[in-house]
Image (cartoon, rainbow, N blue to C red; front, side, top):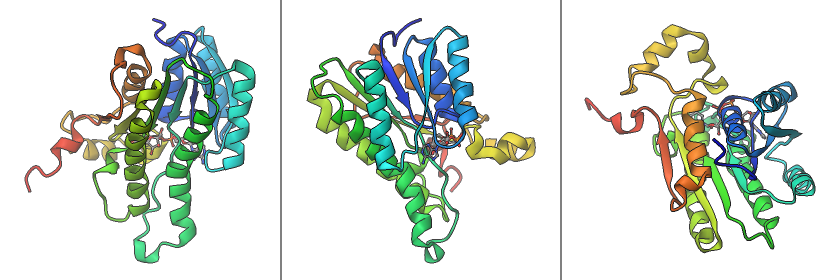
Length: 258
Ligand code: NAI
């Protein structure tokens, strides 16, 4: 299939986990993929090599989304190479600090908000500023979390950042609806990536957590990537401002037995 043929797609944090799976899936659909990594160069190169080995097109660039100047530089580089960016996936993110608010210092709170929320803002703005004169359809996809709605004590920084991402994406969808740019959001549940390292490494931990998931299994990065392909493709042409929850039913299950 080549649902994304001729599209240039930049995916933040595509050296690992969900971002890597999205980059590979986009490569299979014919996109020119811009793989980006913050510090794991080897991971970025691995994603890029895997796309190329499968017959796709990809380049690999270093990008810290919390660094405004670096974001501008990378987006300029992509425009220089391809002349456009069609698809932006704001995937990069870090976990919360697990520090109670009363004890949280400013730099801890800053770190999470700066990556998850500001990072999405910096990349989105850089993308939009480089679309002047481009009339072909644009597309921005955010990766929030079920924690945009579901709260957990001790993770106020993460939960606030993801609620922010959701509302940012919805406001942006309205702003861009008549400009041929669609904006959607994916809210994953428990996905087996580095962010859930304990569950990846320890079957007992994973199985215990899976009991709370109605489908009785944690998600794979590919489960999220398939939705990201759908939202990037013409198959979702009339969809904007939506959040797709990819969680095996976890979110609707909350409150059972209360
Ligand atoms: P991961 O740890 O494998 O991937 C996170 C990626 O973000 C990495 O590539 C990392 O290098 C990148 N990153 C972190 N800070 C960055 C920065 N300042 N600049 C650029 N890149 C940066 O974890 P995963 O699960 O693939 O996470 C991807 C997204 O999915 C994140 O936004 C996360 O919050 C979200 N998510 C993950 C869930 C899970 O259960 N794994 C559940 C809900 C949401």
